[in-house]
Length: 100
Image (cartoon, rainbow, N blue to C red; front, side):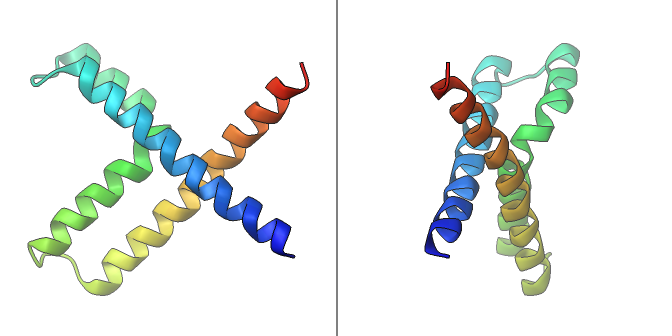
């Protein structure tokens, strides 16, 4: 049981890490004033970058009191689940590479 819990938590952490890396690489490459091409690229990358973007927006809305506590925790739970799904892909990719 502990092994499964550890793998699940590791998958969430790997998903958040992959999301953060993709988000920050996009921000570095897009620059301060993104053009139409970089905006289209952003929508293509949002599948991986989504958890970080969503939690940043939820945190900002929570600080300005425009989001309830329950809305913030719902966004956090969604980001956790989304990161878990991304993390499973990352772990599977790592296992595939290790078997080569």
